[in-house]
Length: 226
Image (cartoon, rainbow, N blue to C red; front, side, top):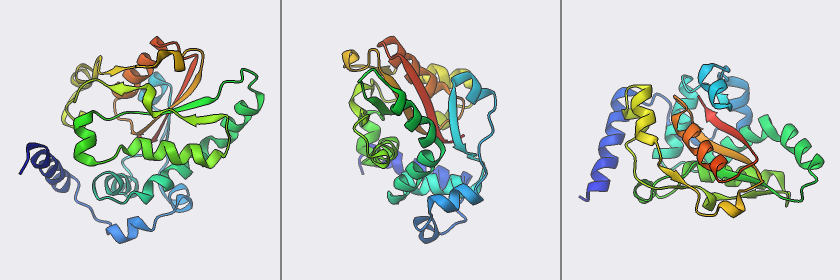
């Protein structure tokens, strides 16, 4: 067995031991955005969110949300990406649509997913944040909002943030790992930066700073859960 497959197996084993899945995958595969929005706990605006200027829809401590995100990322239930995108759309579309209506710059709003490293992408086969971002953009049906997955890249494979016990360790783990290969496509633009889960905020903060350094005018950070 290749090393990357062994690592994936061990990581899933850790998840199964620490967070055993009580909800059947069949049930999770039939979830709707309406069900999540009406039954799941919503995130509260705590210190992490306020310091990183991030909005999160759901509380990750909610078992339904935690299991749904795990099923999406590790069990291949990719349709949940559309469901999560719909919850983001329901939460943000009024503000975003209003901004697009008033915009006179002529530049589209760019939606940027937090990227995976090449190794992690090959291991998983997809980037969960990119799937959510793609569906989110399509829901607007507007040429004024575009998916821009290519403008932010992860330079190196970092250890999973969940395995880093403290805030300082997580910040050190993620420091300097993002770059912007096409700064000319970012400069002067308004962006929405999307991730699936924000914990300490280290990843979102580092990615946001890389985009600001490339000349982004404004960045709205959003996550499915916190």
